[in-house]
Length: 211
Image 1: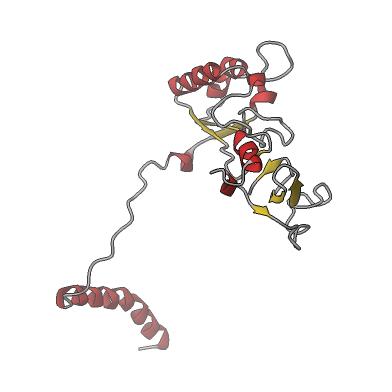
Image 2: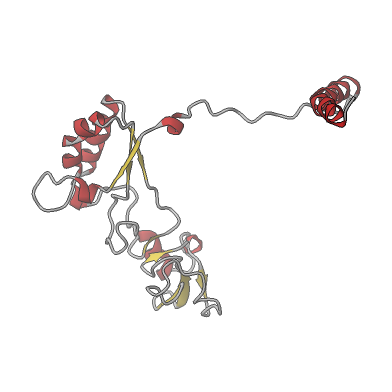
């Protein structure tokens, strides 16, 4: 038999040999246990989804103030449905000073008044559901606005439960000018807070705090 033939037989034999060893081990070793299988994720809708990402504030203005809102988005659901999309991905729409395109969130439980009300958001999600469109959103939890109540309490009280939700240092760290996401715009990843009398870490701009 040629060398090529030998290799072919060896390769095809490997699965059988391994399988045989596993069966033998399971049959003769009383201490061996079958590995637990991770539960399967049956709902893999996102693999074949057609996702449309949008900013509420720039999509459709219903009240004529020049800023998009959920009522305007609601009006365009039939249009979006006609495009064949199966999910809408919303960029941040929560209350925010909007110094970082809305990613500096000051309240995770509300809707920015520029985009109208929480009731409008709920109505929009119901309208999307009726058309078979899923709604997903950016959930920015690795940092908050410096105006968020959590940060306001953390800066004013060293014993606050929110203090450890942010990263503080009594002295300016020697690596404060490293790791900036926006070099040339950012001057540092650490800023001094007079109320806290300490330096706080911010991976991005200084007004969204935390990492």
